[in-house]
Image (tube, rainbow, N blue to C red; front, side):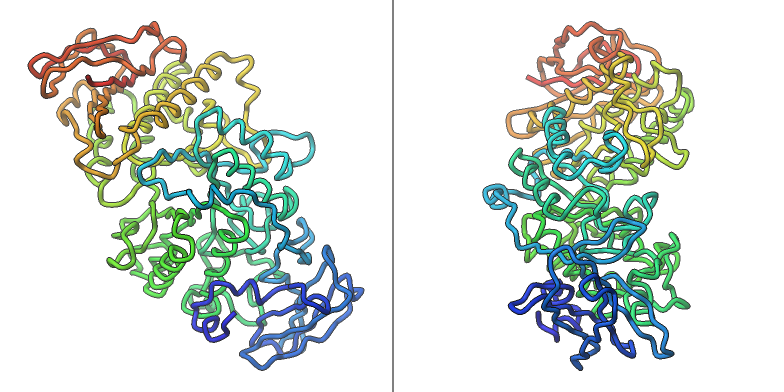
Length: 593
């Protein structure tokens, strides 16, 4: 590690220097605590008695080599303050930690090579012209395992076949940095380099990622770059004063009650850059989804408070550096603001992300389907709005965990109407999402039509598939549209090219009908959606030319719980006009010949 780079905020490998590392004569420990009066190492190898650390005189770096320390030993740094008091801190760069409520760091050897995925790593891509269909998962509440969690290895044996069967290309894991409170879902961390012990060991996580790659599944990590937990053994006031966070009286706290990172400090920037590089390098993750980007680009995430220029500079450097080190890894922004050029390369003045979650699409679409049918006619163009701004960024469409908690209802239960109508409308909506340009992300449970809101303490309701046919048929529908997305180039290739998409009309509001086309090379598809409750026996639609239309998918087929026989219809476009049968609450996909 280059110390000048560390202090200037340009170091990407600080984790190879700080923390606990095996050397020829034992284990070397290093920690950065510039305003401490002194620092001691305590651990199971010292019977938790102080082992004074040496101040190397390089900006507050303390070090000590312990001969009898070994893998699995517990340790902390005892940070003495100027007034003689002290606090025992977990290692900021520790590779493993005890399971809560305990909080010691664990000496861990990451040098063991668990990977056999060289071919995957060499040929993976950001997926701009390929299908990207992500399954978002919370490891602890996907499926039940008696009174304990599944380990990383056990999860791979169950999850990977499920992903393959259901047509997902990637899995996105909610934060697995070590964290003290289950209900934070990992978003308030105390161990940014430590894979949570809830599900096993770092080696187990490596084996999980490797198994995914060997099965052709990419793995994305939900990465917290904005804030950290306030627990006293964590990063907060690390050397007795704000070190990783902003001054407490000057914006140190986030709206979640946690500490916000101080991006302007070189040592903090190097910590966060090294952390991102660590997960991509040591664990072979294929991308990072960055939480709450709004808090990086605006003060407190509020555009009315102005641009946070230090945060903007940091995130540009962070993205550009990671692209240089890991050119094929995806960097995904969760940003709810209208900050411009989020997915524009840094060299052209942008933030440099590869994709941005389309939270506008999510909000407008779910809000629309919560309205009674008569009210939808007044909001007809809400659905069309995303088509007009879509090409401003490289968007990813998402129905994530945030849309299934906190009294918002699940995706299925958000639909207006009775039991069967909810299923009909949700099928039509999910087909609309698949056909809309943009990469896709669904939270676990969406694919089976879960009614109960997500609870991190309970598994998803997979048992509902057995006694309830509607859920079985809904799961089949989800699987089939995922496969359709994967198998048809018009649904994923060139999707950020305006020339490959066109609306057929924006004036069908009184009918609640939407129609658009996508074309890539020799494949052209027509999509017709009806979000009203009255079927149209013969709906006239205009599209240029003379064509045969062959129905590929109908969300109201009986095999999916609908009312129409699974007998694909054919229609002919003559002199620009075609008369279509369109069921209520339906989405239809046609191949144009």
